[in-house]
Length: 94
Image (cartoon, rainbow, N blue to C red):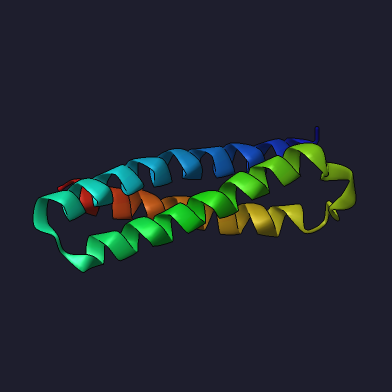
């Protein structure tokens, strides 16, 4: 596996970890308050979790189908997503 593809997979897996914690936090908020916003956030995080799971699987199993020239750009997007999710996690756990 190319180093960039491995990095893409690692970033997707890290995103999945953060998203799992976010889903749990939002479900807990929903149970405690009954508000609708945490429910929507839990659904949105679940869909992002699915997106990252499919992406990580694709990077592992279909690497040869991707153009390697685009990997650095995809890595940039993944790292930006990771940074945004880390900030969201910090805010959700405060």
